[in-house]
Image 1 (cartoon, rainbow, N blue to C red):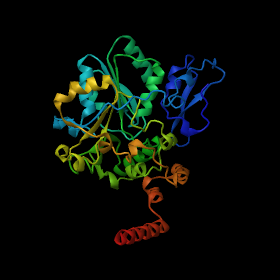
Image 2: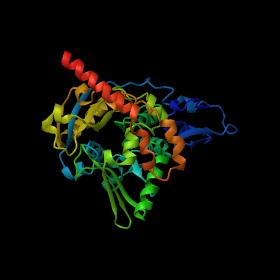
Image 3: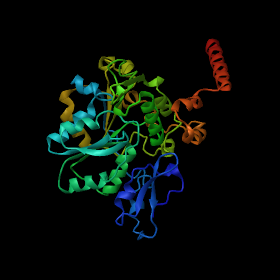
Image 4: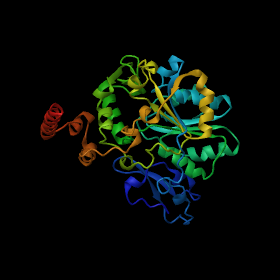
Length: 387
């Protein structure tokens, strides 16, 4: 049976829980808010399926190559503005829907936690657009996709690379009707941190949250996007991401899932057909494709991915790119990020925190850190001047 001895060895994809023929595995939250499989040993028949489908145990067995890399965006500006970067996911999704297929992706539920769900038309597709900086609950998504594929229905699945790996491991065979798209990922923060943050805002604004958009571009542009939250009483909260406590804690790696610090899927060869994400640095590499409204990097891994890209290309502004320039090797989406040195202290203090603002000082550099950084800068200037 599946037995997680070190939490870094579980990405929370839930493939093990969904494949269990006796339904004796449940995803259970730990004290940090992350989900791990819990096994009812009395019901377990030792079939071993849970271990066979674990993407961590079998990481590296499927490594599709990089066929082509592109930089571009969807030409329809309203769709692009409603997207996190260049609107490529929406274009791919429309292709699937046009064939009578289903699109699976991450959406907010009524409590503004994130879960995976299916869209069968463009009206339903809207809930899947835009980044959600949380790990989504899979529920029975893998099982539902398998049934759709058995009915010969076209399916697009979008998620993080570990979720794509979990789906492919769960299916245990390739299907012609399946297109998998992974989104470049920094890591997934704790749901408990997000819940604490929402409670704090609802108390401050004396109203329930009615809408969340992590990447609003209208006011400050794509490169300095805003977190946009509105409330049932009509109030609204807007903060550029460097000024928002939740985004600051997330991007300082203090509240990420342990497996994100030892990610087995942050490499160019991924388990998906297509990888999409923000093309940071496009203003230097291909400024003609940068209008600060969102530009995507698109990495094609399989012939199926190439076929789908060629189908959407007429509706894009794009150019072929060098992979290492479109997505540099130093990018956080190509390497595991190190945990913040105060991570343990953060989660120790989180249960008693009434506001995330109380915890932000943990990511601020100490006086000793500031002195070291200043001395390092002085030394670098001296060395540079001597050269």
